[in-house]
Image (tube, rainbow, N blue to C red; front, side, top):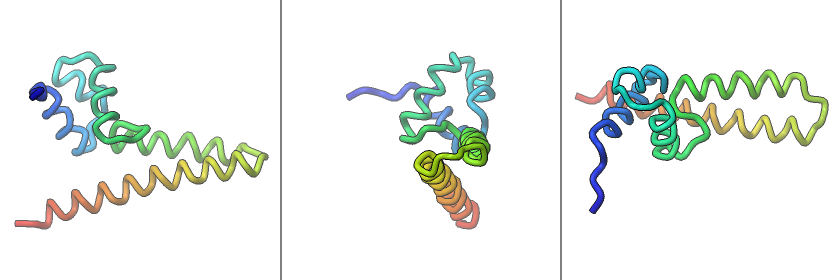
Length: 101
């Protein structure tokens, strides 16, 4: 049975707290790309943290505003909705943890 490296456990906790990949990488002294790939794979998302999701949404909304093609706009809308849902449910999960004794 494969053991998870200690930095991976800490990186996962830090990402759930909303810390950026850069900050996690610096604090754990692990290569940025390794941290990014681990967090992204663990979460199963296109972003790595809450900040990553926010940035993802921001860029997609800018692209959506500039797009004239309806098929592209619909695709971007779905991507934004997915990222917003991630933030919503992650926030609810964190809120429940904070509210519990």
